[in-house]
Image 1 (cartoon, one colour):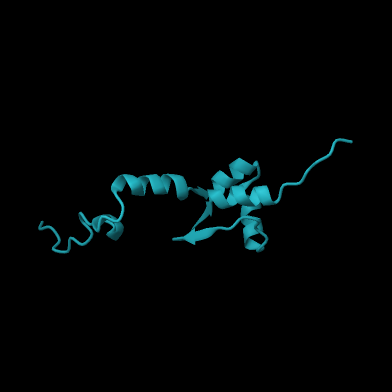
Image 2 (image 1 turned 60 degrees about the vertical axis):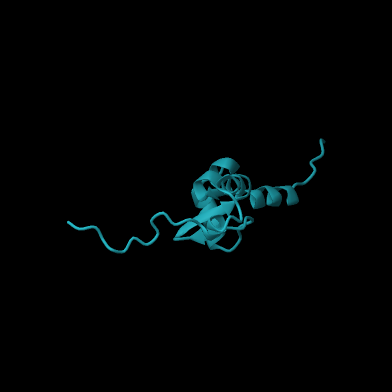
Length: 95
């Protein structure tokens, strides 16, 4: 068999990298520090609730947490989850 003539994407780099705006290491560091995404399962495990509870809140437009739907999958930005949790903290007092 012959190889396809269309080799689009092979060896191509992100424009930011190819124009030397940022290095590969800087991109990896940025992704590691700033782009943590959690799945519904990971969020449910972290909050000690079921995935169904997370899904139900999302479907009823009552989700406390912002989310993104990418190719049919739901992702929650970890930094926004922590921020939301901190915003909703209440002080409990001993009785």
